[in-house]
Length: 336
Image (tube, rainbow, N blue to C red; front, side, top):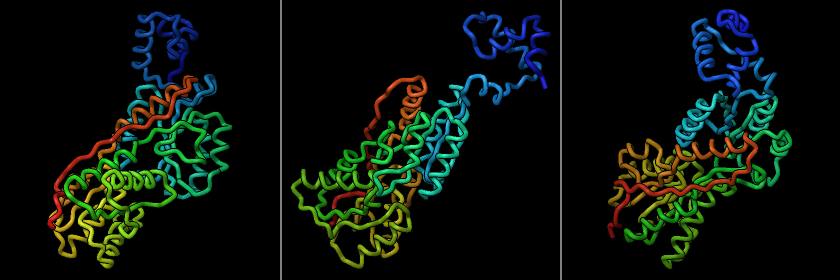
């Protein structure tokens, strides 16, 4: 293993000078830094991160806690965070909560014990307004950014989110402008902030258009393809006479569309359908899906910018980003 003193001996400088070069100290010239770093690479020197961490009291680690990497919404968010973390000299460690409160608590405590320099969390939303583990995280002093909507139990941290209410309202307005008046809404869990915002946006658009809200058009659909299929089956059984369906996310919309198409309905000939999120599958579904385009990569870059300011001791604001709609073949004027 190549040590600092080996590089110093070959370069004809002191070990202190080599150490300063590796720490990018300001009192060493650019020319000396370039020469010694080139020599270190040539000799195969690899910095001892553990030793550096002990000296600097930083780990150069960022933790990211999400529900699951299989959720297509996270792919570009995580890419943006990792790319910027790499440029800043940080490594990233990931953990999945699988939407389990107990698992999330254990993961957060492990991240605290690893002394990560910063932590991004997509929280497991719960009805309880308090969560002891988030209070522990606050006491630890680790800079933390919530990826998504804030909630009472994590309100002490900055968050970066999409303006789901306005985006959902835009989507409902699109359906109304096409001529739809009976618009079913397949909603997600009631205690999850983004789900509630999307339902609120739908209701706001109806109110603006002076269309009476009908709770018989609201179907609990969770957030998966399977749950979308079940909600669609219930809707068909109840014969609610809707001419359009707005789903809480793209997976629910795709599941519902599968059921409708399986029953011989034409999309959009008999029934228009729209989702939320603009996951890759939405564009390539057998009937390309009208949806809300969330700024996923932008969410990641803004989250990293907030984290950078927190690590530097700043006090940045939470961020709420606008989204727009993408109109594809799954929505059209009602047939009747």
